Amino acid sequence: MKLGIGIASAQNVAEFARGAEDAGFDSVHCGEHFFFHGPTPHALVTLAVAAGATRRIRLLSAVTLAPLYPAVAIAKMAATLDIASGGRLDLGLGLGGEFPAEFAAAGVPVTERSARTDEALHVLRALFSGERVTYRGRWAQLADLRLDPRPAQPGGPKLWLAGRRGAALRRAGRYADVWMPYMVTPQMFADGLVAVRAAAVESGRKPDAVDGALFAFVSVDPDGVKARRWAEDRVGATYRQDGGRLAAYLVAGAAAECTDRLREFEQAGASSAQLTLACPPSASTSMLRLLADEVLPASQSPVSTTVRTP
Image 1: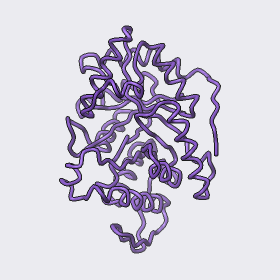
Image 2: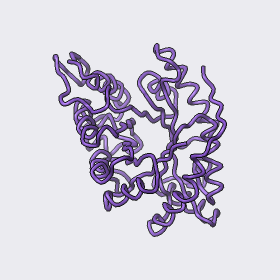
Image 3: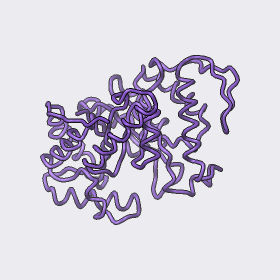
Image 4: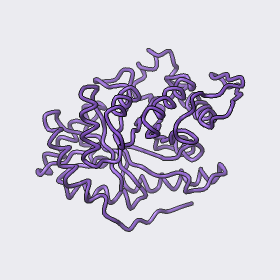
């Protein structure tokens, strides 16, 4: 199982990314909000800094809020970063909506987020092809235009789509290379992946056209009780919810407990896990080291995986 680690701050990005690469993590990821309950960086800007500081590690936006941008702006930024990084970008996209004030600030009705995202995905696929595109949509109007320069990766960066419910699962089946939900249990993940792959078949794609990846908050410490308390407190504060009610969705505890939990998701069909530290800032350095020393090596050993397909 491949493991990625999240960049949570706009400070010391280059140092963090180099450390993650040296430790053997497969990727670094960064999410975003224009406005939220606390400070959040911009995903693609942050990843551009990480790209310049590294050579191997992959870069994932987890996630870029597609409805808040013109689709052509996402295409241009993603293509530029893909070229600058030597073809290491994976483009994660989500709808957002949990903080309506940022939609109002951007002049985008929150009720349009689904339709805007669907149109953006169509435009991105077309532009990433490298061909000239003519398209008349509700928001995008392209008249025989071609993205130039095109992305470094043929066909463009892989598209990772978030979401757990029916419409999001169907969207992932139609467009995604990777489906990446968060706040799920292993059983929810397994059931969702079956639904995504069924939607892929309905859209004329092969079921294995869509891979599965987990996005999860992680807290690891030799004192497993403390790690779980840290995770519940941090995630609860981030989303203004009771952290105890979210405990089933976290990867938290001692190193062996976290490894076992990741194994459950791997057996449910996840080929990678994108982890975001959930701990006090003072503990982040030691936690990252513990993840690298104990959880990462264990996650890379073979495991028997049974994946259900439609």
